[in-house]
Amino acid sequence: MTETAKGPRIRMETRNITVDYGNGRGVRNVTLSFEDRKVNALIGPSGCGKTTFLRALNRMHDLMRGVKVTGEALLDGEDIYAPGVDPVTVRRRIGMVFQKPTPFPTMSIFDNVVSGLKLVGIRDRAQLAQVAERSLRQAALWDEVADRLKSPASRLSGGQQQRLSIARALAVEPDVLLMDEPTSSLDPAATRRIEELVGSLKKDVTIIIVTHNMQQAARISDVTSFFLDGEVIESGPTDQMFTSPTDERTEQYVTGRFG
Image (tube, rainbow, N blue to C red; front, side):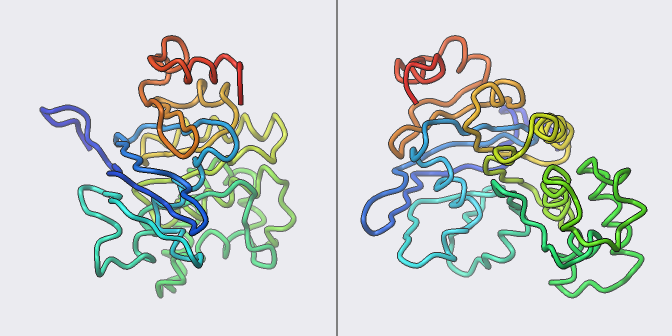
């Protein structure tokens, strides 16, 4: 995908996204845009709405009672909340990796990776094998598991299980990959592997990552958005956000004066 004469391609954007939980709003009127093949970090103190916003980007809130989402979330210019849009199709195009690794522990490594394809009726063994190898290579896991694809996923380390979760998300070839604090439960070595992986994946997919670790955001992201009390305070190139933010609250947060 290429940049247009008007500038970089916007893969996804939101317009006044608001999430109501019934007893209060999770996020209010969030308008953001995400360039194609960039890593976008969402930062802010605990409870500021980062994860709530992230889950609105692939209709995960549809799975919860009493949650209402208003506004627009556009993928390639089309609103994923428009009438008639299938949320299952949305989640294939906008994959998600959660805070804790989520492999299916009783399934084999192979079956974990291709489970999404099987769900939509793909049964051709050669095709599944090709996708499994491609996805595991993309997730930097192939060399570690190629000789034990039939082993249960539960035998993998925590870091390997998280990379397996990423491989599973990549198997359906999403346009956007959402990551909700994917390294928070991992040791430093596994965290480094995931960060390196994020850097290599952005050539193929747009990444939006929630992180509580500001150093991580500074290391891996191209664009950073700062959330506070359910609102976006400021968004811009990561270097600018960490060295010369325009809002005093952003400066206070990134310099550790609160949060």
